[in-house]
Length: 534
Image (cartoon, rainbow, N blue to C red; front, side):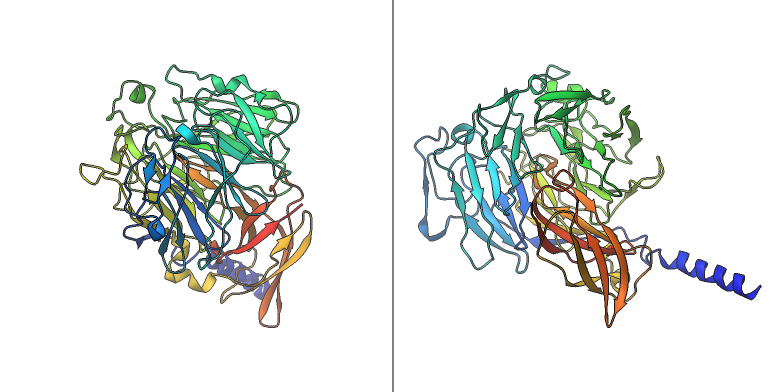
């Protein structure tokens, strides 16, 4: 009997070991920058471990001047032709310092996505910026990269409140916008814009179809959701190939927005699940009713199922304007937003200060955990982005047309970080340190990652590719996590070697830069950046 008893004891030890010692840690907050000078409406993390902050250009004075006496003059700008204030900046995550950037045309409610070479493509906006293409090629903190407006090329239609998604070959598809029911591409394709009538329709008369939720599925089609409805779209054939059941509970997109995320792609990558959480009541925006409670429901659907159906779950808190951020572990944090009202200037109240952790692998009814509340309201025009060290960056919040520092919800210039429980000191011994990893890899390739770690828990190690999305208006455009097939870890000398296989094609993971995280016992490493190329 000794051997079976010993094996049972070993199993019990393993069972208890794989639970982090600070499993109940609900996260901590810190202020990174007290005053960034601008309130970031659009935010993106770069492979140089800095962050692009971007507001609109027609707000008048910010609290950040353009450098060296530079001023912007734009005779075509209908609202602000001469301006010496910055409306974009770079945050250096190593020093928490801000460098102002110059952007020429109006970026109000614009869209963006990274190109395969790591350049951020930025599209549309308002006024003189509605048809503009801009690029930002990231650089190290001691360099002077800046925004570039592309010449001799414009969007076919003005794109205000649109969504961008990178495709399998690195092409960017641009979808939606006020009064626009077409698709178009960058690089632009012969024949111009593709007609797509679904985007010009909404199930209600207040037009809850702006900033549509767009997800590239591993089979190559697009899941496109706006208001309460979704379609599966084959962009090669320009055809809707499936219409999904209507999501109950009311409108989910701007101006009644919740948020959406594509859950981790794993296994043979044949299954894709999408979650949409929160939103406003239909009459909140329509009647400018700031005290109308937000929605509490989430819809989850297997978008690749031939007979898909929505599974409805309930958050512990009602929320609109929340940001759903994919963590390196495959869990999701929902943060920011309000508990009443809708999107728009001064149309929301009752800030939702408490983040919520969503664990998709748990049973229905037990997936949500309330985390440590913050103290700064993050309402309209706020953002949340995953950082390479596993923290969540929180920026922005401006419910006013101009920068306003009085009243109930003043313009917010502080930048914060939220550290999930996996970064608690009690979990430090589980955190892997990546020693070596490739910087560039092709599709379907075998490669190795080496790590050191104080306490390795067998059977829990994962290697995940996580994208760096463009985040604005409660949706992270292009956000995805791909779980890699691995072998090991195997101890070789003083380090562990993990054999990995990269994603098989661009539908699973479009060509771009990704954060490579090694996760041990639910605790992620600091990411290494890797470029996935075709």
